[in-house]
Image 1: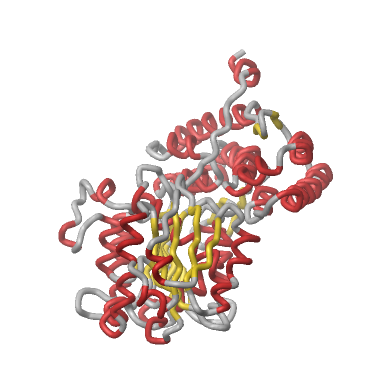
Image 2: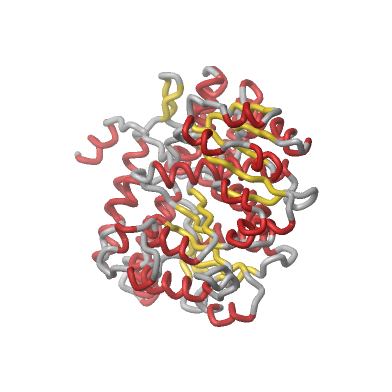
Length: 479
C-alpha cells in the first residue's frame, strides 16, 4: 500500500543549480580584434549573456550593470581602466586580464606583479595567443571561471562541487579550462589558486599548516566541497617561488580529505612518489588532455560508477541509479562474489564515493541523506537499497514542467519541446534542467549528450528534439 501511495503522489522536480548568480553582462575593452570578435562566440554559445564592446577606458570604468558582470581587458586596457570604480559601482563584478605577454603566461603572480604591476588589478589572469590559447577557444571558459569565482566567493551558502586547480602559470590552465568545462558542464565549479598559501586558505581557511584545526577544518574552508584536486608539483610557497609545494599539498589532502581524487599535472620525477595514489598527467604531452578526460569521467563521479578490485580491474560499470540497485542486489548475497563486492562498496562508502556520484548525477537530496551514513556489511546494503529504491519510485512520479505543461516520459518531453515557448526552453537548457531531470530518470547517456547544448529559438528546439528522438529509438531497441 505504501508503494502505491508514493506512486500516486506527484513530486516537484527541483533542479540543482550550483551557481545561483549568473553572469548577465560581458564587457570587452581591447584593441585586439581577435578578442573583440569573441562577442560572436559568446552570442552563439552563451546566449543568456549580453556582450558590450567598449572603445575607451572612461566608458569601461563607468560601466554599470543591473546584474553580475565580467570586465575583460587586455594588457594595455588594464593599465588604463579604473577597476576600483568598476568594483564600487557593481557589487558583482569580476575583472579578467587576457594577457599576450609571455612573462605573464609563464610566471607566478608575485613575479608578474613585480615586473608588470597592473596585473594585480585583475581577479583572474588568462593567457591568449594565436594558437592553443586563441581568444575564440578560451572565451567561454573565461566567462564561466568568472561566474564560478563570483559564486564561490560571495554566495558560498549554496552547497557546490568544486574542481580545485593549483598552478601558477596562466598558459597551462588557459589551455586546459575549455576541456575541463566541456566535461563537467553545470555539475561543478572550477576554482584556480596559484600559490600554496591560497590553496591552504581555500581548503582549510588558514594561512599556514600549523593553524589547521583537526576538529574544525571541515567547516573552516571549502575542502568539503572539492570533488577533485588538479595540481602541479612546483609553485610558490612563501618566498620560494619554485618550491615543490605540491608534495606538501597532496599529503595534506590525503591526510584530511582522502576521498578527493588527485591529478598531478607535471612531468617531473617528483611525481613518482605518488604514482600509486594519484593520477599522473604529463603536462604538455600529446594526448594528455584526452587521457585526463577519461580519468575525470571515471573517478570524480561525473561518468559511470566504477566498481574495481584491488588491482584496478573494472568489475562493474554502473550508468544509472537502477544499475546501482542491481549491483547492491548482487552484493547482498552471502556468496564469495557477493561478500567481496560488499567489501569494495564498503570502502567506497567510507570515502563518500557513492554520495559524490549521486551528487554529480543530480541526486542532491539523496546524496545529503546518505553522506553521513557510514555502516558496513549487510546493513549498508539494506540502507542503500532502501533509499535508492525509494528514489526510483519518487522519480517515477516526478514530472518536468515546461510552461505549466508536464512531461513524465521521453515522448511527452519531445512533444512539449515542439509546442512550448522557445524562451522557456532556453532557460531550462541554459541551467541543465533537462539533463538533470533525465539523469534522475535513468537516461544518463541522453543527459550527457544534451548537457553542452545551448542556443536560442527554433534552432535550439531543433537540436534538442533531434537528439531526444534519436535516443527514444535507441532505448526502444535496447530497453
